[in-house]
Image (cartoon, rainbow, N blue to C red):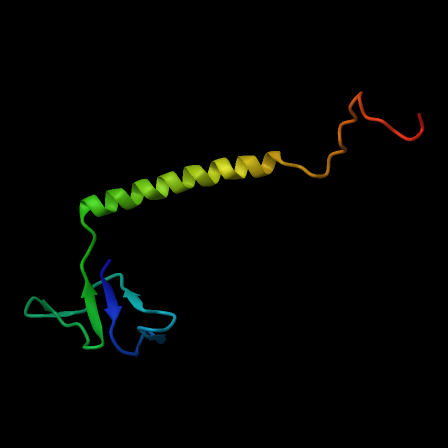
Length: 97
């Protein structure tokens, strides 16, 4: 998908894009229409180069590692319970004797 860096405030599809605001990057499903095989990008936007295959592979590997870590963290959290009664040990002293 074509991605564009916002250089100045502009509207696109009814949304405000601002380089220092909430939406500094515009992602479209299709590139802007071309005139004589050159993409006509508005002056308020700058095209960001697409990811190379190597960059995409590194990003996917990082996402897979993050998912694996999240799964192991979820298991650790699910196993922890603070609602269970404490286990009474035989060497515990009480006031009653």
